[in-house]
Image 1 (cartoon, rainbow, N blue to C red):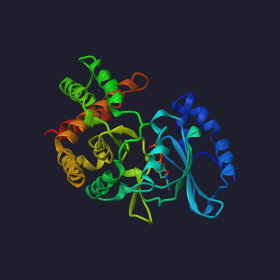
Image 2 (cartoon, protein in one colour):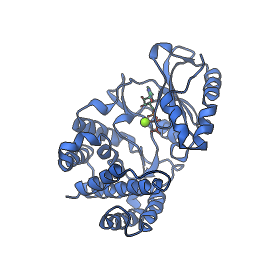
Image 3 (cartoon, rainbow, N blue to C red):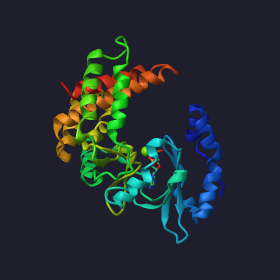
Length: 303
Ligand SMILES: Nc1ncnc2c1ncn2[C@@H]1O[C@H](COP(=O)(O)OP(=O)(O)OP(=O)(O)O)[C@@H](O)[C@H]1O
Ligand SMILES: [Mg+2]
């Protein structure tokens, strides 16, 4: 059966030539790996799924086991996805059945389509925080240190002009915090998921919930919290400050994190997100709502 790229993923072609090349080669790559690994498309499991930068095909192995074949856009962030899944060995995360990291191919245990988007947000935060302890294992040596990234992004923030459309006080605060995190031994040592939000936790049979889709780095567990605050943002509209604080406190309590350290990382991460938005706005219109969200969130955890 020929693999057709879903329209939502096909639309990523607009993001540039790197994406177009990957999308052009995707049906062929999928056909090749199905053949090489003895997989067949599982027609009973509906259509292919996709995220921002990957195609996920429901497949059956040659002995009839349901699995999911993930074909990812080659990029630095996902380079060590297989390594992380292997290291976890299915403990708190989807089990890796086979991988070809060079071609960014993963064969995964098949999980259910249900993720944590429709759960009450505080319950979802508690579930995700409950996975931290199992996911935050000693970092394998291949992983890049979080501190290297933080140094680079902090210097990006420091170079912003004073009249950039974000409060300068917050920029200065994030620069100060970023520099001290970059120099702090506690900012590395643990493998962190890197992108642990509501859509990257799926329902399963062998456990209620398992993490998928890691972008692992050698980092600090306190770095992990922010995506639970900025995702499902629209639901907080009636009480942004209260809603953010309740989520933050739920995660900190459930995971036993140091509150101040977790808060400081949220401030730093939100200002990094703001920086990337400002950089992207050199090529397209600025998303003011997104920028406002970054600033509001960085303030809300501190009030
Ligand atoms: N093991 C699995 N079993 C069933 N469905 C899966 C599995 N892994 C992924 N999926 C489905 O495919 C979608 C995309 O997968 P995933 O989140 O791993 O990649 P992604 O979101 O494209 O990655 P990125 O966050 O880098 O854009 C998921 O939201 C989920 O619906
Ligand atoms: Mg995902």
